[in-house]
Length: 320
Image (cartoon, rainbow, N blue to C red):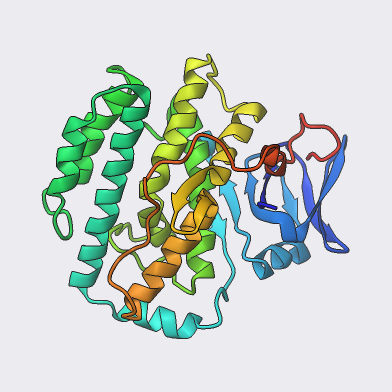
């Protein structure tokens, strides 16, 4: 079974543990989820409390706690210290990686992102010719800033001429923020699970950001979120509702084609992070991206969306 994204969405909730379950309670309702099923916890409400035992149990299982700030943009993430039996070896190799290696890896990542964006445009029937040309033009380290050029062409074609990507705006921007927060948490978990340090990036260089590597590796998977956010907007959804959150979190369970067959996005992130560790250990020179770089339309198993249930105040007795 695919892991659950648990959201603390009701003010005043409390998160604890009880006999192998993550428990969530507030004045009106309570719920519980098997700890081993938790993919990540997203805290978006105010006045929340957490027991130390709950935080330790999540860390032991590699499940991040994402604390959201304004408009669902992540403000903090709690991750485990130990994630892999070769962690010391892998982090040492990661820290010793040369600048040319990281520049080459960043070029692979940017090329993959632009290809994914072009495929998203293809899926909605928009022209993707410019993005495909930009993908072919990416060089080591992306000195021509093809990533930014692609974004300038992508967003108006994908969302409409009047759209501007703004992290502090509402509407579809808030939907994107929430979806990216989920994706970022899953990527951070994959990075730590591969024995890598999430602050040692390929490219992102913000001095205070602890998840720079997760920000790098999630880039090619953003269009999976973009497609869902666009669909929600076209359906008239203007706010980050419980139903919208469920749809956006469901991106982690969308299947991609891979060598092993159909693989959910969350597993693609683990494969990608593992391949990065192998690059640093000089076992390969390529990152393992799925092909093609856009998800198949639906999860592979009927009813698998049931495993995405958020623990929301509006959703029955598994809520907080």
